[in-house]
Length: 357
Ligand SMILES: [Zn+2]
Ligand SMILES: [Zn+2]
Ligand SMILES: [Zn+2]
Image (tube, rainbow, N blue to C red):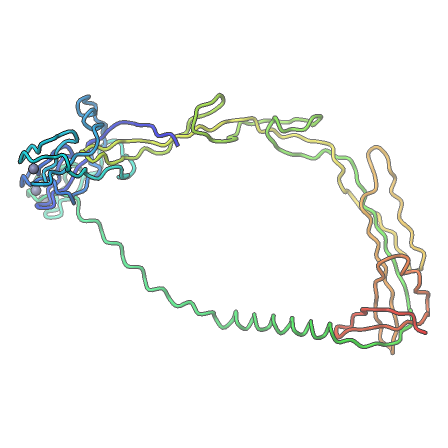
């Protein structure tokens, strides 16, 4: 994602020895004159204004400062000898940099309360202007230890439900497998045949303008984001996230924002003529001569999918059983009163029908 530089801001740091807040570019504490410790971190200052001085901007771009390995004094990136003790800085460690310090807050930030006397002071102030107490950034609040996780036992109710389901499945399997045979007579037969009625109708869709099929009726179009990319393009709109501050390790922060290009395109409503199921016609009967219902076929209407169901009811020892032949050919054998040998499972479902001798 392309990053845009908004500018540079001066950061601040808190002296680990006396708690005084110092401007980022200051390398020793304004109050106790101790060098900025390696452990002291740069924070965003409360000023919220970009550096305009060209020299300061050039310094901010130089890269992270180095810490003198002999006396700990902060030195600028290109220094070869420590400004404080003259020590060789060839192998000096660079201060850490590149961390995101948070969203960039433009403009002055709210006043801060002196922890000692309660007086309100401007956000960037080093010391309380009333009692002189240091106003450094207080140590970050330690995150609360997470509550010990409760042991997650399975509740009693889910166990009961799972048990019931298992019992039901077992019962189904056992009853399906158990079978008995009985002699039965055909008591009645019935059939039902239906055909879907299809009509050509306009159907509404939405798609990118260049995807719309030829011959479609195009309606209203609106510009929408079709894709995002890192490079500018025709019909692309630049969209940037909120600006944030990145530590430069030298007392300055780089304010940047991440941007992408949203490529816009016409998204259009359109309609095409399609065959749509609008109805179904049904024929029924209680004989062995099923017929298909009539559906006229012409330019705007035609028959759709067909469904046929056949039912035979047997009477066996004062009990009735139904059976559904899958084809008309099988159905046609069940003349009224004819005798059959039925195989019936534990769920009272006829699973097999054979002609009785
Ligand atoms: Zn200090
Ligand atoms: Zn030194
Ligand atoms: Zn105070």
